[in-house]
Length: 282
Ligand SMILES: NC(=O)C1=CN([C@@H]2O[C@H](COP(=O)(O)OP(=O)(O)OC[C@H]3O[C@@H](n4cnc5c(N)ncnc54)[C@H](O)[C@@H]3O)[C@@H](O)[C@H]2O)C=CC1
Ligand SMILES: O=C(O)C1=N[C@H](C(=O)O)C[C@H](O)C1
Picture 1 (cartoon, protein in one colour):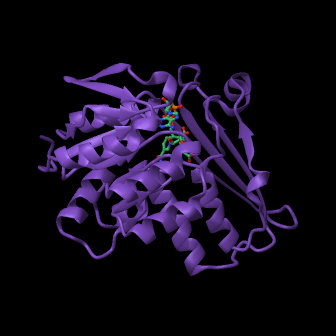
Picture 2 (cartoon, helix red, strand yellow):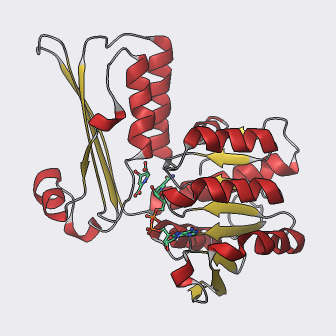
């Protein structure tokens, strides 16, 4: 068992993917009990995956509801962690809510308003955040605080945003969208459609500076602000190679959520800034 001295079952959906696998491995390292079942797309159904000493059976989406029911019966203290695909976000969340499974939603995209509404209506415990990396969450929180304290401070400034991710990433960075919402409160006029997405590996290496070994898993973000007369500029960057800070953060979120469930906390819906603020990131 890890230094946090709690153990509970964790079911990771999307174990066939990069994040799902990284979270499952981090959960085992932290001493949590891995549920030997996970969901993927129909093509992966029937596969087996070895994570530490646990053999995970992969199921297709059509089997979700009945399996979730049986998981809850067998593992009543389970926390689900979801790292699937943007197209599955809303349906998965609706099923977790229907069955009564507390969950950490790391998957980005989908209809985020609907997602929050689903959880609120069902009154289920959940942590939902597009970014689980502790230091990036701290940066996100700092930008939110700046926007609350100094609304309009950057009025008239021009914003350019570039984000580079592995070519397989289907959606625009959810983290960039969260940071931009703070810039908007600071007075900057910017539409999410203006974000420059880099998905071409050659450009990533030559223009963005992504190391070749991280082309298949990286998240580089750059925000550049320029004053109306061009005499003042600001630049913020957060560049992450690999998956480990998100995997560790996801385990922190699961531990946090488990404590909230066990203590029957009144508040049920959280984001990663809540997890960080309560000192729950290792
Ligand atoms: N919150 C955070 O800190 C982070 C969030 N992400 C997000 O996590 C998600 C997954 O990212 P990766 O693991 O890099 O992608 P990936 O493409 O490596 O993995 C996704 C997995 O989901 C599976 N899948 C497809 N349809 C499914 C369905 N209907 N149900 C269950 N599984 C299904 C795929 O077969 C694949 O194995 C993305 O939305 C990404 O933006 C990624 C990194 C950090
Ligand atoms: O898909 C990824 O890789 C990432 N997705 C998250 C996002 O969309 O913000 C977090 C990070 O950028 C990595």
